[in-house]
Length: 283
Image 1 (tube, helix red, strand yellow):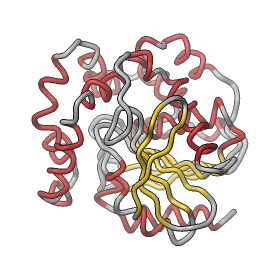
Image 2: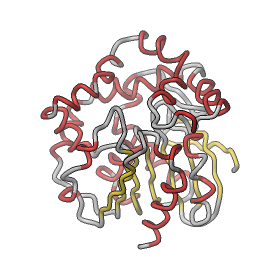
Image 3: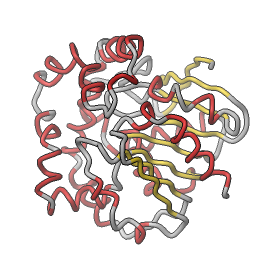
Image 4: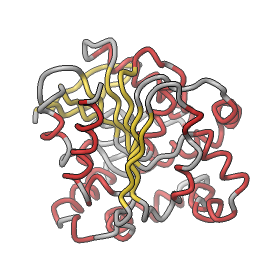
C-alpha cells in the first residue's frame, strides 16, 4: 500500500492506494479512517486501482471547522472531485456507514460518476428517513444522533474511549487487536477530528430540507448496486433493508451476514471481499 495526498473540492485529502485497473474508491464511516479497509484493500487490488481515502475531517485529511463544511451535498461533491483529481471519470464506489451515506448521495446527485455501488450497513436515505418517522424501534436505536447535536460534550465523552465504542458494539470484539484499537484512538485524537466526525451528524440535522428531498426523490439508481449488511448492527435494524427494490432501475442485490455486526468488514473480511468481487465480476 502507498500513502499519498490529493487536492479536491478545496481540501487536501490523504489516501492509501494499491493495485492497477479501474478506480475503486473506498469511503469509511464513523469513527474510523482509511484503516477500516485494511482487510479489503489487498483483495480488491487484484482487480482495481483501490483508493481508500480519509474522508474530510478524518485521519490525515483536512479538517474544516464549520458544521456547514460537512453538509451532505458538500460530501458528495468531494467524491466527484476526488474521482476527477485521481484521473478518472467514473469509479466503483464502496462505502460503509457514513461513507455509505456519502455513496448513496453521490449515486442520487451525481450518477454519471458511479460505475458500480457497494454499500455496507448504511440504509438508503428514503428508507432510513421513512423508518425514523414510522418505526419506534429505529427511533430508539437512533437516540445518539440527537445526543450528537449537543456542543462539545459528545466530543469530550467519546474521544478517550472511541476504540471501546467500536469493539464494544462488535459481534466479536476480539477481531480488534490492541494495535487496531490504538490506531483508532490515535486517529480520533488528532486535533479537530472528533469535532469533525460529529459535525457530519450536526450538518445532516441542519440540512433537513435536502434530506427530505432525498427521502421523497423519485429518481432511481441505475448503477449496479450491492448492499452488504451485518444483521447484528446495534444502531441500524435489518428492517432498513426491506422494500428497496423499487429504488433501483439497475441490478440490485443484497447479502446478509446474520452473525456479524455493524463492523462486518472487520469481522468477516474474506466473506465481504468475496461478495464484492463476485458482484463486480458479473458486469
